[in-house]
Amino acid sequence: SSSSSSSSRHIMDSSQDSSSSIMDNQDNKGGDWKVLRRNIRAQVENGGHFIGLSMLFHLTHFLSIVYPHSMSTFPNPTLAEIKSHSRKLCQTDWNELKEMYQGKDPYTPKGMMKGRCFDAALVVSLLQNFGFSEDERVFTFIVERNGIEADWTYGAALTILLQGKEEEEEEE
Image 1 (cartoon, rainbow, N blue to C red):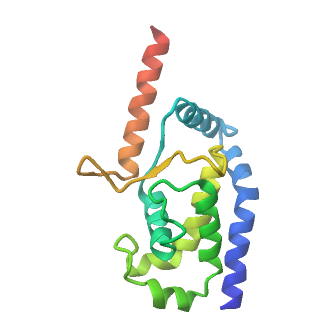
Image 2 (cartoon, rainbow, N blue to C red; image 1 turned 60 degrees about the vertical axis):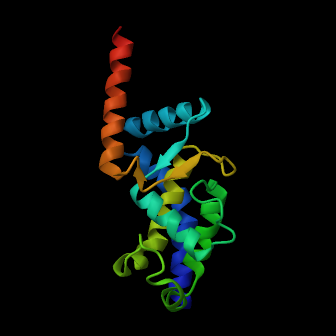
């Protein structure tokens, strides 16, 4: 249990350092990530919200179940809240976590709970690399929108459509 705790902590501690180099070393030298980061920042700076779907929702919802008093801002937590609770989650003894929370979150089926620490490291890393500051309250994590399940394919389709619209506007 203490060895799993320390390896989990290592994942959370190292994710911030390594993720930016991973994202910047894609085949196109990070061009897609840089464009995505710039577009996300521009949207947020113009009063928009970052909508978190799929795993982003599932992780933050799980954190709100495990830490109901201190994650009471769900579905709109700050990066600092997500990061802090992710660290706590990854430092919790697996048997204790399983005993207390298995089956409590409808979005974390039995087989998925083991991966929540990794999910936490990934989500924190992604949000940091998108350039969000720790105290911004610009996230909204959702599982559905207007009665339609919002998953990553829905988000990808919207991104492609919006990129096409931007390209059309630039051509005009």
